Image 1 (cartoon, rainbow, N blue to C red):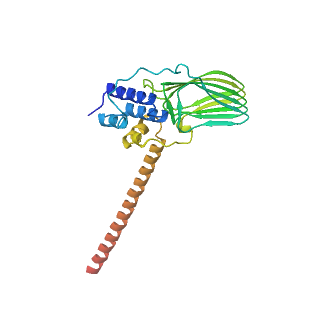
Image 2: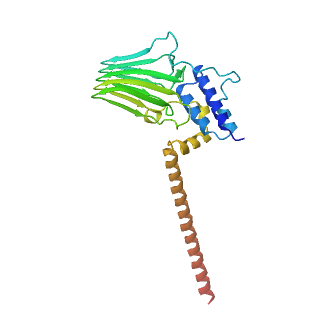
Image 3: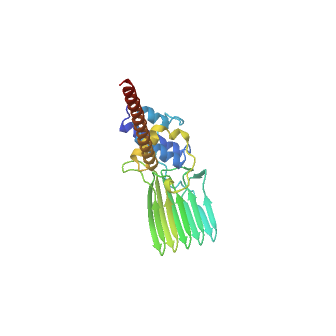
Length: 252
């Protein structure tokens, strides 16, 4: 049966609640949220919540900063600091790079609210923040002889996407926010990567370069096969006409 808009929104809310409970990483949340908006049937929606508990009423949105929870800091002074893989984000984040590099990968993090607040200070260094494509990135702050960049494929307008709010202060340094398509891939939950989801994603969200490349290759291969069939058929026809002419000459 075809899915309605209200059913899609209900699944998106259920996914958000599961994320605040620590059941989904940020990448899983954005992947399944995108898939929910692309779903056309109730069966496709059911795949996205098959491994999640249901029936309980949805709680209110969790605050961006739980009361009494201090900001979590990542600091690099003439060195490197990296945070990636499975980890929990239950407070605001601070990043400081002084002649050093800080990398914060949020894709596999368990996020306990719909918003992540980050304060980033960079002095003659680099801060890289990696997020899943499909989130809403809000980057503000001050830059002096430096650079701030966002390379993220954001969700289409009207979709409820997690918010990454970053205040960046840069002096002769760089702050980069990179989406999944600009970073090294991570392992995804196989549940979200169904054939229909990949097909919808390739058609609807600008990630179809691989799909388009495959379609072009398929068309070229089919053209080559058709040309080969035509050549072989022409050869067979020519041989048939040759044999026919020889028989005709013998009979004369």
